[in-house]
Length: 438
Image (cartoon, rainbow, N blue to C red; front, top):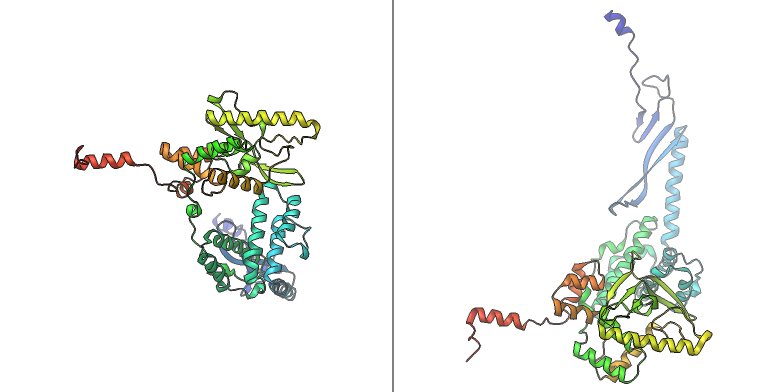
């Protein structure tokens, strides 16, 4: 019985492949002898490099080839290597000017761009037609940085000639001029562009990897905002001068909203019927205006509206502003361009960001106050809330910042906190209540 059982055992199962020589294998077919496979030849070889998406690490790009004969297998491998070399040579010989401009076109799908279109003004004209409004500001900012700071320094170099010292020279020059944020932007743009070139096998490595990321603190460029007393002077003098944007200056200080959010504020989002419980709803931001036509983008990345309460005095100013605007709409009738904006020109067309900045400077001059940016109204709101409450989480909620750490660096130390009571209590603890008397 045991002998019969042994004689019926099935033959040993063959492996999938047999190694013939280093890197070359041949597959088995049904019925092949263990030492004589008759299937297809296969091999795996490295063809350049690639970047792993999970962690961004650069790893070998290994490809598999299969053929019926060894000769055909070697021909496939040689053709793949030759193709990679030809692609590498053709792509890395372009100048940095041509590569960066082409990279920007590919990044934002601007297929209408030509070699004669590369001025910031023309780029903006084409971008407003093709780029998603939420990405347009980034696209135009990157184009301006490339044209003003990168191409004058390294635009004449070929892509394969670029070295870390060329990039370091730009970064060092900008930092010496005090332009630390611009230095970081240059580094980030070149990092993205050159890593894409490496992934496309146009270069074997990215020169920006040899340049340390420039240090930049978000709050480093924030100036001293207006004080509450100065803000009151600004609003009162604007009221006396019948400035049609008085409510805008007050609302910016009362809410800390970004300029684009205020200029894109919809009348349906303003609730000032009860000044003691007034609030505004931010649903969009004004990105750009061209030919009297506004382009809006969501106010937040999630697209969720933001509800922000306002004080009674600001609510009354806003209510008066809306009443005057309603009178203008009735007076002009169909000639009024009504796109639902709270703040607009007399004819209803959207305000331009640069004109608002100029009007704000004129308002400061009229009040005989030092010059600050219109964006600094946001800093005023943050620092004032911080001084009055000491609650950084409340500031984060009002300003809708995602990072508490960045918020603290940017706003917590803009103006020296009012800590007289704390100093007095520490002195009393050491010296007693009579410690301050001589």
